[in-house]
Amino acid sequence: MKLIKVLRKLAFVSAIASIAATQSLACTGITLTAADGSVVYGRTLEWGAFDMNSRIMISPRGHAFVAKMEDGEPGMTWEAKYGFVAVDALEKPVAVDGLNEEGLAVGVFYHPGTAEYQTFDPAMRDMSLGPLDVANYLLSQFATVEEVRAGITEIKVVPVTEPALGFPAPVHLIATDQSGAAIVIEYLNGELRVFDNPLGVITNSPSFDWHMTNLRNYINLSPVALPPVDLSEVEFAPLGGGSGMIGLPGDYTPPSRFVRAVAFSATARPTDTGDETIYELFRILDSFNVPLGATEGSDIEGDVSAMRSATLWTTAIDTQNLKLHYHTMHNRRVRMVDLNVIDFGILEEMTFLPLDREKQQDIEVVTLP
Image 1: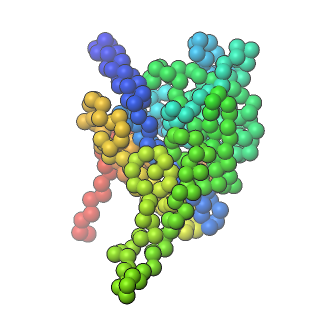
Image 2 (image 1 turned 45 degrees about the vertical axis):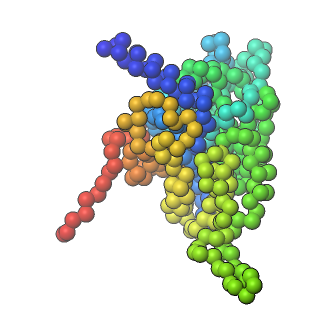
Image 3 (image 1 turned 180 degrees about the vertical axis):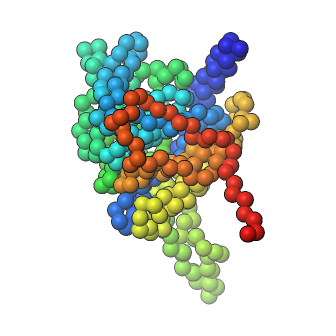
């Protein structure tokens, strides 16, 4: 039985590496602000036709982190100043999307063909991290975006092969705090680049500044319907609502999703509180759900019988009220982890909880009284 389990795990790792080499994830992140100042950030997570087996990861204050370098030896080590809750991947203690007890949210997004990390210098081993260590570091060490902006310059992010991929994970990150400030952290041509992100939107490749420049091609988009036009005494009016959004790209590529995410978040329904903003954020992100077989690379052969969507899970993080909400491909019921009721000081070690206790939709049966 042990041999069968090992072979199954090897097959899964091989499949993950194959699909990672041929596709980009279709993850999309947005940020909304309520009238009371509550800042809510959220995102979708996709990985073709494979389940990332994510869990809820609760990391205590004081936890000792150790980054491993390409040679297998330790790199930077640090102790957590802050506790945090995150969603991980591949059943490994690496935050993909999380919130710490000070209200800092960090998301990790795939960045294939674009991310190129800093060169490893053995003399700087004690300040070097691998790409998948960065979110853990930011969430455990910093309280605000400005602290992240300063702190990220004090470390080196170097190539470290992720065994599940067979190469260093190409990623970039978004950090958002309670003030509404947001930055995108990228490694381009071996250099750190930090971009202000006033729109709070992120997708995948290419670089963030390219996406911002590309938005200039869509400044004609508007939530207001186009007016009728008279041609040779004949009036032509729009056939229905939504004519102001004609030209909005509808495919699954990162540039198109970036444009849609900006258009939808900029025209979001006004909300009064963080709780109400959660509704609006999930509504918008649900329009970015990707069905199985719709993304490049998801036609790779594999067992998808246990999957219901290429969008594995969706988060909505209320930075003011310190709550991480999510739903999954198996259960659309929204679940919430309240950081206010977790004592990060008395936890002795990292704790992991399943995203789905049962991988089926929670359905309320409505009957006559």
